[in-house]
Length: 151
Image (cartoon, rainbow, N blue to C red):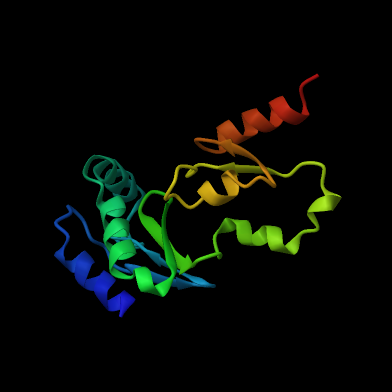
């Protein structure tokens, strides 16, 4: 039912480009892309700018959260063109269940989607990690150098 609803919703979207593979089945989750995962790099960049202005993904996520509240699913925005759908509790903090936290003095997490409703938020704000909001690989590299290589 969720997949059919998503495909109908995407079909009705008035966006400049649609390129196919709108729903991708991944281990433990679905990835939904209104533009489609088959878009080119340039189309990805264009959609990201369009989405920032028109809130395509955030509106879609809000609609799904309301419509499918009884399914106990999380809908979180990630990357530039999509959002993830997974069962409650299966966000990125899931990895912490597999660690003996007492063995680590510090755990650092770097994420670019750290605001509420984005896919890095839960781990970024976890009391078990030191979260770092970054804008990309160069930003991550800079922070790592400051933390571990500065004297």
